[in-house]
Each structure stands twice: as structure tokens, then as C-alpha cells.
Amino acid sequence: MPEALLLRDLDVRVGGLTLVHSVSLSLQPGESVALLGHSGSGKSLTAAAITGGLSRMLDATGELVLDGTAVDVGSSLRPAGCVAAVQQDSSNALNPLVRVARQLEVPLRRRGLQGRQLHDRAAELLDACSIDDPHRVLRSYPAELSGGQRQRACIALALACEAKVLVADEPTTALDVVSQAQVLDTLAAARERAGLALLFITHDLAAASQICDRAVVLQNGRIVEQGTFRALVDAPQHPYTRELVDLVRSQSMVGTRLRKETAA
Ligand SMILES: Nc1ncnc2c1ncn2[C@@H]1O[C@H](COP(=O)(O)OP(=O)(O)O)[C@@H](O)[C@H]1O
Ligand SMILES: [Mg+2]
Image (cartoon, rainbow, N blue to C red; front, side):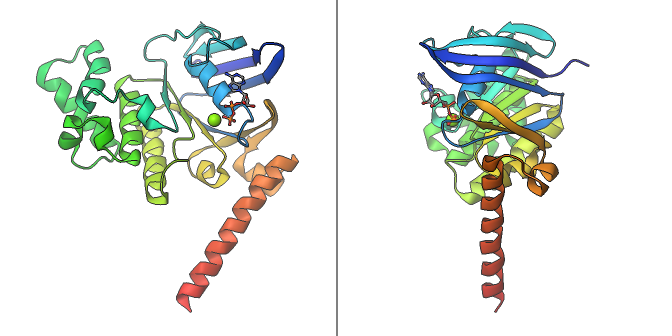
């Protein structure tokens, strides 16, 4: 079986400045990998190079293969159904003027569904993404949904496209903790259900470790470390990885203290 995603030696430049340096990633079908890094480390540029969303001002070179098909990394065209994206700001990802049902029905119609089947399948996908009252949500415009519901509707859209690769760029960053947990659960379930390869982009190591098998750490547009979470947490090699691990440890110490204080 070919890799779901193979990216080799991605460089992204603007004018004479290189923003992403020789980034390589590979994901097997059903595998989940975290791309970690501070703000400005090149995560979104890497995501955009994979999904075809790079600004025209930028020049990208490198090899990109999606589900066995070689793709021009510099072009915005991607083979239908290969790759789907969930973004930090879900209000941009969905068309604000079109009801959720209509948006889900476009890829379903392409797959040959018609009439009642379209509505039933769209409701089933929302239900699979743990959206309560899917029939009401289907009738809604994106602005009538909460941020967490919109993110989960985007994941349902990726399932409707039968995408092989899902690139989720900080999908939980703008959400409250309860919505974050729901989106993480939905991503994990979508991966399991559809065998999606998931590239989960975040600066939150704790969230990533819940749903990813391994992590790649970026700093200043370069990969500085990669490995399983166990290896990264037990023996982080790079100062930035150590910083991320220390942050999670300090947060969990606060959690432990709060639990003790609540019990006392
Ligand atoms: N269109 C652009 N033109 C010039 N610089 C850009 C452009 N897009 C991003 N950058 C720069 O590239 C670097 C990486 O950006 P980005 O991938 O968005 O970071 P991250 O998602 O990790 O926060 C940043 O320094 C950012 O300012
Ligand atoms: Mg970003």
C-alpha cells in the first residue's frame, strides 16, 4: 500500500528568503502525526504546501505524493478526494452563505448519491462527528453553529470527500477546553472510521499526545527533532522539545495540585 502522504525536501521561499527548509514527512494510511512548533515555525506553510493553499507570492519546491499520485507542490490543484483541511478558523473553511447540508452534499453528489440519500448520508456523517441534532445543524448556516460544531462539521466534510489525508492546522487552538476535547475525540474517531492519515498541527504537546502516534518538531522552518511521544517525553534532545515537555509537566503539576486542593 502506498504512503498516504509523502513530502520530501519542501522549501518555501518568498523573495530571497527561505521560510521552510527541506521539510520531509511521511504518513501511512491510518497514521496520525503531530507537527509541533512555536508560532512562526513554519507549520501553516507546510500544511498549505500539502493542501494546495499556499499564497501565490510564495515559491515552493519539493516532492509531494498523495495516495500514490505525484502532485506539483507549487500548484493549488490537488486530485479530488486526496486531501482535506481543517483550519484554526473554521468560519473561513465553510462558506458562510450556504447551509451546512448544501456544503456536505457537494462531495456526496460527486460520489453518485441523490435525493433522500444525500440528506441521510450528510446527517449520518454529522452524527459520526458527534454533532447533536444533525438535522437541525444541516438546516443551519455556519454562523449559527458554535466554534466546536463548525470544526466537527469540517471533519464531516473531510469524511464526505472520502479524503485519504486530513491536515488539521491548530483545529483546537481557538476553542474552550470542552470543545477541544470533543474535536480531539472526533478527529480520533474519523481516523479510525475512515483510515484517514492525520497530520495534526499544534503547539500543544499534551493535545497531540492524546491522538497522535509520533511527532515532528519544527523550529524556524526546520525539523529539529522527531520520534514517538514516549521518546520525546522521556529524552527530548532539542531545547525547544524540552521546553514543550517542561510546559506539559508544569501544567500537569497544577492539575495535580488542584485535584488535591479540591479533595481536601
Ligand atoms: N505570505 C507570506 N509572506 C512572507 N512571509 C510569510 C508568509 N506567510 C508566512 N510567512 C512567514 O513564515 C514564517 C512561518 O509562518 P507559518 O507557517 O504561518 O508559522 P506557524 O503556522 O508555525 O505559526 C513566519 O515567520 C511568517 O511570518
Ligand atoms: Mg499557523
